[in-house]
Structures are given as C-alpha cells and as structure tokens.
Length: 500
Image (cartoon, rainbow, N blue to C red; front, side, top):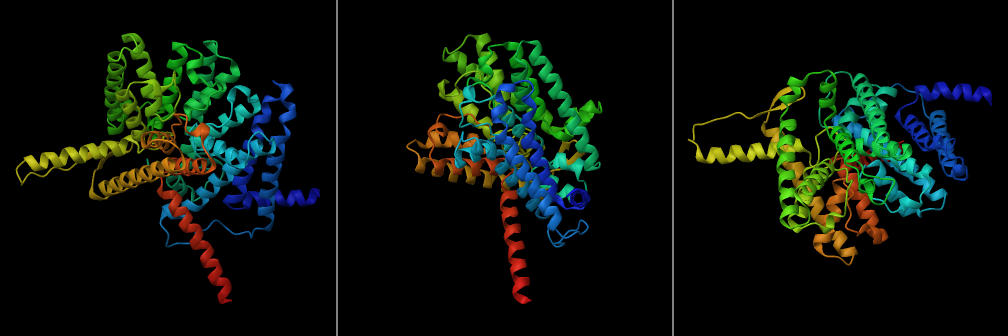
C-alpha cells in the first residue's frame, strides 16, 4: 500500500491538467473544515465535506494512475489558442460546480438542482442564493464564500502557479481574461494572488475594526473582492447600517472590478501609466454620471434626503457596476428611473480582466469611440481621416477593424442571449417580460440582485439561470467553443476506433 502511494504521488506530479484540477477541488471542498476548531458544535456537519473531498482526491489519483504518461503537448496543432484552452477550462468549471454542490446534497439541505444552482452561483460570482443564510451553519457559509473568492480569481490564475506550462496562457485567455499579461503567467499569477490575499487580510481587519464579527468579516471580504455578493445575512450589507462598513465594501468592490493588469501596475507604482488607460478614465466618468443621476432620481421622488440619496446611490452604483450585488435595501422599491439605471449598469459591468461580469467597460468605451468617430465622419470633409487609439495597461493600442468587429460580435451575441433568456424565463414563470428581463440580466451579468423570481423558481427556471450565469462568467464564446471541442474530440476518437 505504501509502495503504491509512493508511486502515485510522482505520477500525479507528472500527470496532465485534469488530475491536478481534481486535487485542487478536493482541497477547496475540505477547506471549510478549518472552522471546526472555532465552532466545534458544527462537527456533525463535517461528513458532508469529508466525503466529497475524499472522492475527488480518489478520482484524481485514479486518473493519474491509469493515464498514459506523456509530456505536455498540444494534440490539435491546428486549433486556435482559445480553442486549445477551452476544454480544460470547461472541465475545471464543471468539476468544481459538481464538487461545490456535493456538500449540500450529502447533508440533505438541498436537492440536486438547487445544490447545483447554489454552486454555480458561487463559482460564477453571481451571488443569487436559494438557501436561508440565517439558518445555515457557518461551515456552509464559509464554503459559499470560498467558492466565490476562488471563482472570482479564476482557476487559471491559481493553476498558473501550480502547473505552469505552455498551455496555461491560452487557458488564461479562454477563461475570459481579455487583458493581456506580457510577463510570465506564473509570475503574474503569483503577484495577483498576493495582491488579493493582502486586500483580503486588510479588508477583514478593517471590517473587524468597525465591529463586524470576525467570521462575517472574512466572508464579506472574500465576497466583495470577488464581486460576488453572498452575505451571511439576508439583509446583506444593509444589516449593519454602518457607513464605515459600506465604505470598506466599496473599496473592496472597486479593487475586485479593476483589471488584473491595472492592479499589477498600481502595485509597481506606475500611476502615470494607470492614468493613461482609457478604461480607467472611462470608469471615472461612468461613476460620476450614474451616481449623479441615481441620486437625482431618489431625491426627486422624495425617497431620501440629499445626504441619504448620496449614500445609497454611491453604494448602489459601485455595487451594481462592479456586478457584486450587495445592497442596503430592496432596489425594486426604487423609482422606475433609478431602477432603469441599475439595469443599465448591469449590462456595463466592470473592467476587462477583472472578477466582474457584464460586457465590460472597455467594450463600452470602444463602442462610444466608434460611434463618436462615425458621427464626426458624417459631418466632416470627406478627405478627413483619423486613426483611433486607446490606452491599455501595455500602452496605446489601435482601435482597428478587427477589434471593432470582435466588440460588435460580442455585444450582439450578448444582447441575443439576454433576449432568449428573458423569453424563456417569462415562458416558464407567471411574470411580466420586465420582471423576466431584470432577473435574467442579473444572473447573466453575475450580479445576483433578485426581484423575487428566483425564490419561487421551478426547475426549468433554475436551469436557465445556471446556464445564464456560466455564459456570463465565461463570456459566452468559451462555452460554445469548449462544447464544440469536446464533441470534436469524441468524434475523432470514435473515428480512430472504427478505422482500426
């Protein structure tokens, strides 16, 4: 037995991507057991985490034992980098979703569909929940927070340190990190994880300083940094009714919705470069405009005084634009104009290459620039030619036809998915189109602010919302490309077997 284990560990180190993913998921499932020394009364819940963790680890060692040892290679050289990384990324997400659901299923707290929904909502950082958080043991609350935190960072950021290899950069791009990192992925991944760990520690300490319980502080810091939105209380951040806690949450949400590459520049004190990034400047204008409009709507409808309106509008804009979904009160009670602004911010989302959802601010900026250029072209002399450029973390880049085409394609598909998802939710629920639109936009943009539709949802509705959360987190195309790659791989193997 000992001899077999000694053989398995080296084989696991030399194995490919998939066994290591399963080991990572096993560790993630076991991590909430760390609360037991502090809350020994929850020891009776430990089996719900020990069993799936052991199963994942056993599956990893079995895969490493039976797999053929071979060096890392690209089996389909003709594939694009995005397609090469799509299938491993989809495997990681699907395996983690199943693993994250198992504790809820084994404990009997949720059925299969609701457990998968909670897991998808956690890993995708959507933040919608189908459990009563006030009655949920702390070990499960920590499990939800960890899923959000790791899902927000992204598997490839973590595996970039552990695994490395030539395929990791294509997988990094496939996971939806559109901002390029030109240094080595392993070094950049380590820096990003250190940044987020440092912010997690500081955020937790600040929460605790302003009298938030230590367990709540850890969970909320994880959730805010991952722009997710799971809370330990049904009233979310509004439960504490504390301006300092709201300010800390805003800062953490802002960090989480900032481009990873921009965070690297800030850590390296390259503030002049940061100030030249178009997405950063665009974010500043968007924040000012939406805060002013939201405050005007709240005050004009006598909902709040000027100071109250400023407080609620600032928090709502940061929470929605970062796609976190924390709230101080029920937004469905707000005036229609303010609610419309909330829905518009759902679509915009945060920065590219961040933990936020939405179409991303850089795409919105490119659309604004292209629209402005087309208007000027129509009113200017025909011989006038102007080349458009925009600032990125790596320097100025041209807004060429390929970039415009890719942006328009993504926005078009994004709008089509919202349209189809809204119709499906309206079909399977006794609700209006506006209610279905609000709910699907919330899950698709991984915000998780519900109008109550999810709480009374049927199984078809939960499945639709799960698909919406995955498509939103992985930016649509990777899901389709990964499914096509899996089908193509199966077809190739079947063809080889039939020809033998």
